[in-house]
Amino acid sequence: MKPKIKIDVVSDVACPWCAVGYGELNKAIEAMGDQAEFEIHFQPFELNPNMPAGGQDAVEHLTQKYGLSSEQVQVNQARIRARAAEVGFTFHPAGRKRIYNTFNAHRLLYWAAKECGLPAQAALKKELLNTYFCLAVSMDDVDNVLAAVGRAGLDQARAKVVLEGNEFAEEVRAQKQNFQNLGIHGVPAFILNDQHLIEGAQPSAVLVNSFKQLLEA
Image (cartoon, rainbow, N blue to C red; front, side, top):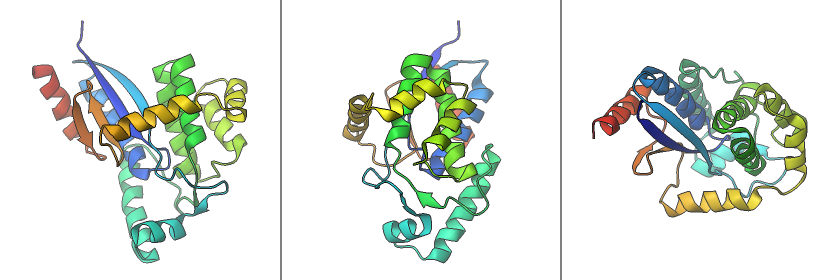
């Protein structure tokens, strides 16, 4: 029986580096699949918890938040887009148009794990990232979010009920607070077996090396 490595992936679907991290993690797991079993839990983090409905123009938001020029934003986006393409995400060539609140996305991810299982949660995570960065459509439009649910193979009717109510809101808030209390203030972050922290969208080789060290300990 292969040893199991538990990985808590703390991330946000509004974070392009989280898409890169998702892809690099999948590459690392594929490389180590004959040596270990992996249990992946996607945990909530909100980059913009106070973002109102309707969102904000992406370039405007990034220039205000990070003090960058619009030219610097475009250079950074091109760099991230190239990195994302290497791990299976074809970001929209014009970039994401707006920054949106992602709390409802995290509620759906919690629902997917609780009622459908961790592989379903991973599939939904991928499709929500695709919605945000590859399709670059509104995350405030319920139809777009439900389309992601459908592409992930999950029950759109049940997801709609979750979105229309307040299910899992307290659970998501508690999870967010827990990881903030652990000192995680940037994403993506990977916690291996509740003990070892890897910060940032590291290349898959870095993750593989960490997995091997765990198995040899």
